[in-house]
Image (cartoon, rainbow, N blue to C red; front, side, top):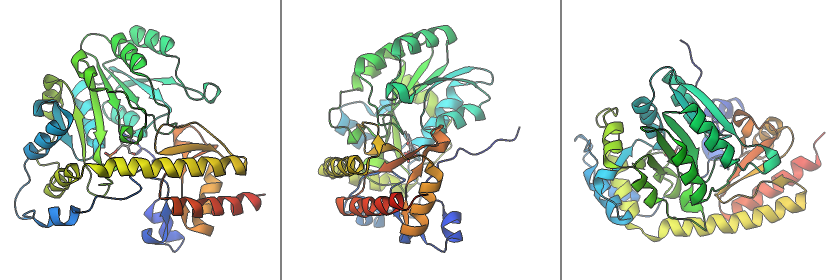
Length: 357
Ligand SMILES: Cc1ncc(COP(=O)(O)O)c(C=O)c1O
């Protein structure tokens, strides 16, 4: 069977080359990571890593640091080479060919890709523009009960809409799953939510795994680092599918150092909040509609998103996410950067909109 790779629609090196640009030339709003970048001290932490030694395949020190920080046990933590790896491992561990998975859409394309690779049958529970991309939870629970999926993928806050589901609604989804089914609650963007509820008690339900991404809140994006919080038997089961040493030593050292810099994620959230306030005010002034977002990105309705993205890149060296691959060809997603960067984006958007055919 031949398959296509998931489309991420962000800045792409081949495209940049065709425009005569290098990555450093572009102000990239297509990724949504801590606007302050990685914490200080990363380079020193990584310079102490012995490059000639294999990394700890169990990530013990990092899991202990995470456990201490979060108040869970190390046995409830599985570290991955980015949370993307953990999405794929979960699909491998829970989905055999022909089995059913539920995906709350529109959402991150890697869920669908992981299910496809397993030959699973996917049911999309879709939210539409008409409801501001809120799901009908009673209907979702009914469909889950009917379909009895082995896994449900739910992103909270959701990429690309920024909608943040309540604790009660998430519980209703988990409760609708059959025995042995798993809810993978992807909280990659949770650190940027201001009014967070505590999702850790969901682990007591026994059928929920939480996914976190240190490539977002600590901007360790090039290193790749994510982790799963899950009941120990779930973490052990998923871990059985991970190849040895998948999380490299530099990423493990950087993760431990990042956790020691307690204020960095909070400062990043504050910077993203200030940028979002500025940007949404300016979008209002430009007459562009956007979806209220609890995350560090906004989904903006622009008409032909592909054309706008291309023009911004070519004329202004600014990258935004074209949301066609989410099934939203009229939308772009803008990840928050510093206020100054956002000012450049607004000026570029104004110029492009004024000169649009
Ligand atoms: C919702 C969501 N989950 C997971 C990921 C993957 O993150 P990581 O860099 O940890 O693999 C992304 C990346 O864009 C994402 O949007």
